[in-house]
Image (cartoon, rainbow, N blue to C red; front, side, top):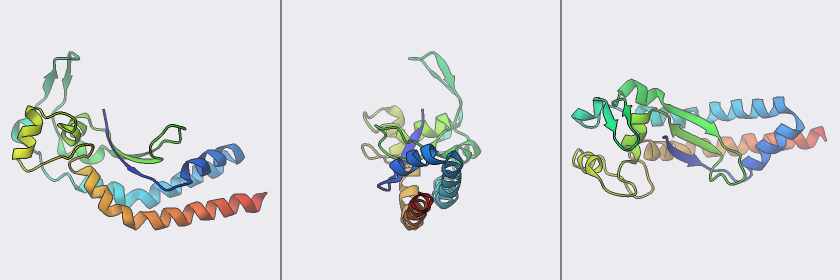
Length: 168
């Protein structure tokens, strides 16, 4: 399970896929540069985690439906769980995804988005509301940082397109 926030710039998916066909190294360089540009949004997502949301949330618990134990919320794991991933599949909603890979933090982010439950109620009482289809902390933090990286991404994409066109 992961909580995901998407930044979408039109043409990125096609550009990344075309780079792989033209020159795999050019695609690797493009992705590395995109990660550097997106670093402020990733940091903002990680810095949104400042404390354990509710007291018992740090304890491990049993998922009775799936018969497994879920590790409790750990602040350092929540911060380090904020990662960036590229998704260039044809049916992908976004291309650059900033995700929460830590299971407990992802559960915290999305609990109650579709249906209210006891965890959602406790989190809302503790001051962590969530809207339908949104996340609690990572989404708003990344969205605030988004404006700063969109122009740099657009410039990088246009530079890459010019480089590819020049090579032909």
